[in-house]
Image 1 (cartoon, rainbow, N blue to C red):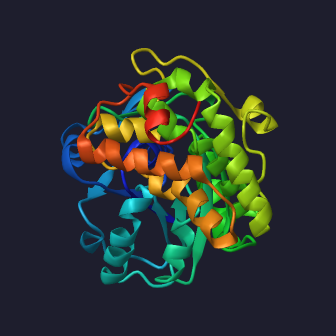
Image 2 (tube, rainbow, N blue to C red):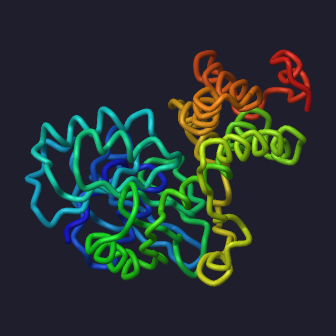
Length: 323
């Protein structure tokens, strides 16, 4: 099984470097400064126990790759970039190779199924950093991260088992999971706080607004008949396989939304808090807090607002909310 990692940000960078480091065949599809740095000097992989520069094959677009039947394609870009990526894969000749969505949110799998028949979900439990081109860091040990993997919309197959084996070789804990979307909905509950941290700073995650977003989401899930598995801090696998530990000069830099803003990119809030707003509208459940946070994420990008610079009370009042 050859691994194609499409998107060499924090998640994709750690996966690509770790898989290449383990001796498995991997091609990373990247862009911009990150791609240039990897081609020039390799990809530096850091963790509490590893600091190593890894060389790997790269491409700037799927069209540069001669795809093989034994390829496993891992989507690691943000959801707002998924549609373009899927179209590029189709144009490059991808047909029934397994496509794995190593992405936050729950919209990617359905999007991918419009283009390809062999789609899999993957829940990513791996706090990681990418702020400097050519460097990525996982903040976990002894494994780099934990993944639940399964077919979409349900079940598991040989592709899940084979990929899990590759990831285990690369120092991840990987679990074929028949109800992988329940795992991903559980991770979605955790990611709702990303925009709070990005807008107001990490302390704001302890404010009263965070449980209100979760309460809205749980009400929406109940109305929609959606089961969300607990993949948070109480998941025993986290203690067994991957605990947060310090990485010199590469400590926790914040969640994916904050890192996107620090790099000057777009954010995936439309597919996190926006997913709750969408489900609420479909099922007649009010979701004013998540809808407001979705709008706030978009405004931060549009107005170029410095991450963490907004005042929580002021912004909530302007949004018609109270903390």
